[in-house]
Amino acid sequence: MSSARTLSSKSVCTACRHHLQLSRRSFTTAPVLRADEKDPFAALLAASTPSTRRPQPTSRVTPEAPQSPVMAALDDAQDATALWTSTASDNLNARNISQEAHRLNVYCTKHNTHITLVQPSKSAAQTISSSVSSTSSSAAAKNKVVDVLLSLSTGNIGFRKGGRGSYDAAYQLGAFAMKQIQEKGMLQDVRKLEVVLRGFGAGREAIQKILLGTEGRLLRRRITAVMDATRLKFGGDRSPNPRRLG
Image (cartoon, rainbow, N blue to C red):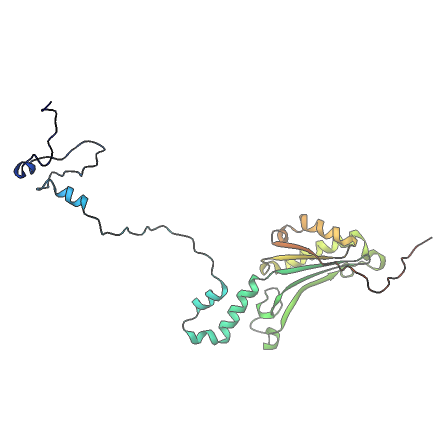
């Protein structure tokens, strides 16, 4: 029984304590004893002292969040006085305009169909699809505000009188408008597009078929909202009597 009893640290003298070896078992919590260590208790002392070393930051690359237009303008400016120049204000306005959406207004009546593409208000020099050149045009032409990029109706493609209100005329008008938007390079400026429908004519369904079909495939992915701007009358003056034939 006495041989199986383990000796405590108090029953071992100081001289014999230096000759004791630490445990070499696997998965042990005791510190590792190195062969080149003169003092076998040096590893135990190092393990008991708290470490003051801070963990080094990892080199993981985190994706940067997109900057707001105001912060981007502040980064571009070299000093505080550069923010008061006209160039800095133009750059800030250009960033704000680029975030606004274009609008495709479709006005459908029983007699005709009108399609209008409108952009946020900016100068002709900043509009890619405008015919104003940055070198040959005058300053007045460059500073001219451009809102409407395209305005078409069924009369512009050859329909006359009663044929302008038909479904076929509205469908051909929508296909022609999509072709003009692509050929004139207007898609380069369009980041977001809002479709505004007004009226319940035959062109309403025709334009929807155009946007969902192959003709509107390049413009369809840019659409962010579809709105109805049909004006409804509540009260008001008396409407004319409906026309009745026969």
